[in-house]
Image (cartoon, rainbow, N blue to C red):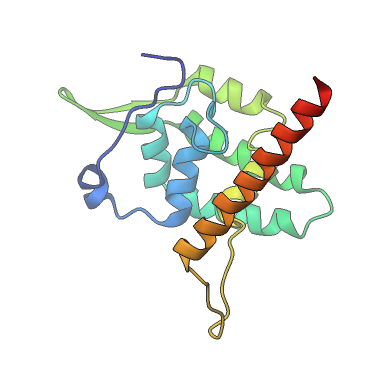
Length: 171
């Protein structure tokens, strides 16, 4: 696969998880998503889902909400990052064919504690506060496409004609 290919999930795969928006954002921030394709080095889907199961999505959203109004948002996110590292260090339960295994992922804890700019405040803002355009209840959009399309084509023809005139003048 190419370097930018990601595993895909069907909505049916996630149907029984009862994920909140904050849980999905945490998952994307950990394993990589639209706004940061790298995620947290060494963090895979199992760890991300285990952290979602421990309520870390809501904690990330709370940290982001505080960081938005903080003079030092990076300090707020550093506290969240260290708290998550503590959760991982204590161990995450994983169900295997041999039963439930608790793993503490020391390399991931080390990576998380050393990641000074993780998660990026900008990336979190893209997820939690996306820029969207909202129409007012009285607004309308003119979708008279044939007329608009005709105007565009007409404009292109005029531009093309002028370009031909300019080319002939240069010759």
